[in-house]
Image (cartoon, rainbow, N blue to C red; front, side, top):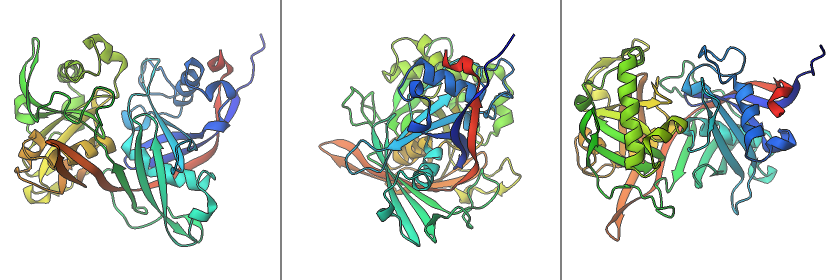
Amino acid sequence: MAFAPQIKIAATYMRGGTSKGVFFKLDDLPEAAQVPGRIRDQILLRVIGSPDPYGKQIDGMGGATSSTSKTVILAKSEQADHDVDYLFGQVSIDQAFVDWSGNCGNLTAAVGAFAITNGLVDADKIPENGICTVKIWQKNIAKTIIAHVPISNGQVQETGDFELDGVTFPAAEVQIEFLDPADDGEDGGAMFPTGNLVDRFEVPEIGTFQATFINAGIPTIFINAEDLGFQGTELQDAINSDAATLARLETIRAYGAKYMGLIDDVAEAEKRQHTPKIAFVAAPQAYTTSSGKALTAQDCDLLVRALSMGKLHHAMMGTAAVAIGTAAAIPGTLVNLAAGGGEREAVRFGHPSGTLRVGAQAIQENGQWVVKKAVMSRSARVLMEGWVRVVPEAFS
């Protein structure tokens, strides 16, 4: 029996922040995949190696974690005064779906570099040496992000001495600005969808918790670590090796998604794994990171642990960092209280791999909290470029 050969598609494999993903130019995709729908999803699933009942993604580019099961599609922007349109797809590891409900803040750090290198940024905007400012339209969430990409001799500079906890080797620093990161309420949402900084949140058969629900960067549910039976110093193995704990946290997340108005029924959360995130916070204390580095209570303002796609993240999602910085800037949220309360324009939080600083300035307008932008530094580099190959069955 004859079998049709594989089809090759131009692609670039990149690290952005503490994530990795496969990047495509929209017009390099097969015509049927240049529009949203089943064919696009099937192709991306096969590229990454999903669904994989073994949970390893051996037959694809994925790395069997939420941080490495990612895809990005970029194109010249259709938005006025923007350079590039950025669409992010979080690929499920063991199920046959791509979650398009949110952004990836870490991979945002690689978007500007890819756009410059692949001709999506006008040549007259790129200096011979210095910083190229790339204005990104994030299509998943309809927000503007600005990436400040270093340029050396007319090319993207990837090497440097900037160190990012959760990434082994240093690289060039890329500063990212998330403009107006909170939900604007146009779709019925708001920065605080319940109207409260802290809610009393009941989860059937599990318990009642204090929680801060926020739409900033990415919809996120913050709960005090001690209310969940945690200390806030946990590393991945302590959480991810405990199936019962993961199931409990996923149930809380599902009810939180309904509480935030993101879904109508908790059963829908199974197909919406990327959003909302669930995170737990605690006051600063000493702990040892996953790399063996000892941190003291003075090294950060608070501790945060967050789950992504049902597992504790090895560091921190970039979008969740935006939510953390935004919530920390608003007096009275659980994040702000864990950091000691009061007004602040930046926060350094401890995560399983180390610490991260994110800035956000909150002001009140007409009685409502508003955050104009959140800022953080990341790094990015190309790992491999060329073509990925996809079996023809993905097109049927």
